[in-house]
Length: 116
Length: 112
Figure (cartoon, each protein chain N blue to C red):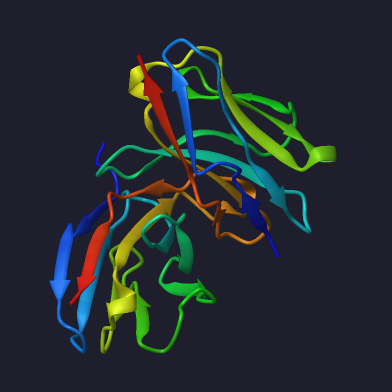
């Protein structure tokens, strides 16, 4: 079956611009996660959705970052007033239910964001 | 709070040699432990995981890992490396919260 998909695969933008990154989780997965992976680093948690609601947004670095999942499926990560430090690969993952029970998170290929 | 330390950002082994990638974790609650592999331009793929029960966990592609609570370790091993094993490997810890905390990764190089 289809895995987690993310669009676009690459996004180049200018400092100060607004960007939206999209994630399509595996059908039926109720849990959805966003991570950010900077060069040479492991993925860092940003936000977690259980259904439509953000259950944990403690990883969002500041109020320029926002994510939604209005119908409990597709999610959009939104970044306002982008800065060069936002350049990274943004990863999305989904899980059949919360990973609080050690369930596997299935990762998408990521969106590489470059802020010039 | 949880954290993961992966010793060695780069490991090079000869084809057919033992692979050993080290992972130590810190967790205030009983941990769930994972190893993921990332091939170039691909997403993270689960190799294996430890939740409860048997401390020696077998995964895909001949990899295995042993959970050692006393050493707070979850090292990844494979008896005989193949060229196709060249990739970046990430150890991660999860707990009662849903998020995963990843290490900084180890790049495995396999030489002829």
